[in-house]
Amino acid sequence: GAVVSQHPSWVICKSGTSVKIECRSLDFQATTMFWYRQFPKQSLMLMATSNEGSKATYEQGVEKDKFLINHASLTLSTLTVTSAHPEDSSFYICSASGQGGSPLHFGNGTRLTVT
Amino acid sequence: EDQVTQSPEALRLQEGESSSLNCSYTVSGLRGLFWYRQDPGKGPEFLFTLYSAGEEKEKERLKATLTKKESFLHITAPKPEDSATYLCAVQAPAAGNKLTFGGGTRVLVKP
Image (cartoon, rainbow over all chains, first blue to last red; front, side, top):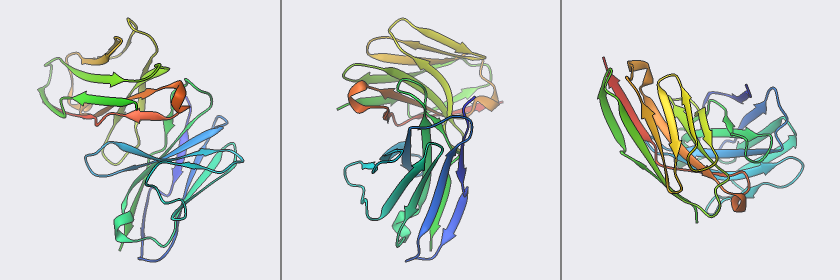
């Protein structure tokens, strides 16, 4: 089955620093990848849609200058949280799909803690 | 705007006690309805995709059904390892490949 790898699985950083999270599709080409954020006991909230070779599309209320997304190849998308603050602490999850209508497969998430 | 509502929010079951989870949705043209299982600290794990009303899919103790307004996830004779959060999501052409998620149902199966 389709496998999506996300790295790191957890990271602790100091306030003001930047953190990069990688999302890779291991056995298929992902023209589109999605980045979600999840707070404890809540569902997934879509942050942005990442299309290979073009700019990401951000959901309303998501700061594009704070959450930088790069989708440089069909198998890799990155999310960089810039100038992180404690309120950015959350569980970030990526997903990928090869074609419309096919199920999205998710990475195992990254737990970000900003101190 | 696409909307997905799951009920109940939480469900406590005794091992072997069958039950159903509900996912109600409103969407402009359903491309697919997806069920996922999520364990704590992990990403969602794909379970089923349903495309049209009347469709049913089964996997072990789980069975998903779909009508024009809602989907049910039936858990038959659950075991403690079925404890997880079950997420329902819809995909619509107007929204591209984006999934709109419901709030999830946290299921706890006690031995």
